[in-house]
Amino acid sequence: MVVRKSIKAQIKVTETTAILIIFFILLIFGLVFYSHFQKRSIKAFKDDILEKQTVINAIKVAFLPELACPNEPIGTCIDVQKMESLKTILENKQNLLYYGFNKLTIKLENKINGESTTLVDEYRGNFTKKSTFSIPVLAKTQTGKYFAILSITQYD
Amino acid sequence: MIKMKNKAQTEAIGLAVIVILISLAIIFALAFSLREKPTIKETYLKAQLASNTLNALLKTDTKCYSESNEPYTMSQLLQNCIENRKYPANQINCSGTFSCDFVKAQIGQLLSETLAQWKKHYALTIGIGNKIYFNFTNPPLKGSRELETFPLSTREGIVLITLELYD
Image (tube, rainbow over the protein chains, first blue to last red):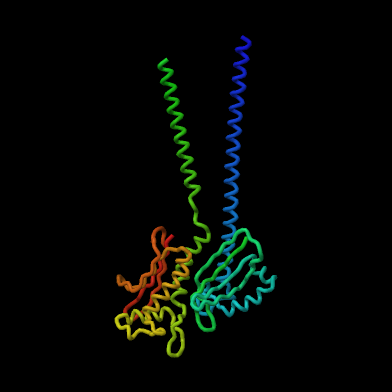
């Protein structure tokens, strides 16, 4: 009688242990899955912030009154001569911070004659991620107005 | 005994139905949450790209010069091409290339160096009504569409230059 009861108790203990083991395995699976999901969403959030910053800087540059061409709607044309002047001003770090430009490069590439002008080149060494935003604009030079690409690359 | 067996079967079926419903709900939730949302960059680009591209394309100076050494704009060459389409001899001569051929090559090159390179699907049509003079496409032309139209006045009538951008 005692032996039979002991066997029954042993079976119960084994059963409970098995259930506990399965429970913890499932818990570990859940935690691993959750941490992977969290990592991915944090990365997506960081990427989103970087993209947002790139777009904000692109809009800022395209709509800068300092770079606007006369007789052209703002945001559609960039005056290369004004860009050269602004470039000299932005060589001072204080002015660069005033415009809110940090860790980015701003380039205007003339697609007709192949010339390119760099307004800001703030890429210094290592970066974990970069986001580039390019938009066609008119580039006004001393010789005329040309089809050009305004590219902003933001580094993280 | 049979009554109890029936009851057990009904319960099992009920459980199976609940499991199926929960699985379906999880599949739907995952499908919705994993669907890629358009980024802020895509949303802004879509709105600005078509209008900026057409504006820059039509107002750009070209490497085709007049006798007084002034560069012709793309819209001037386009206008000349459409007005003198039937008489190539009257077309502006761009270093040995007639305006129509020059415009076609230049627009094709600019679009392939920008929109096509950025993997954008587009259709640029230049024409009056059903009469299409030029057509530049990068298929497939599917998905949502962003459209921008610029009118160009010529002796043949108002030419519509339409750029359609697809997702």
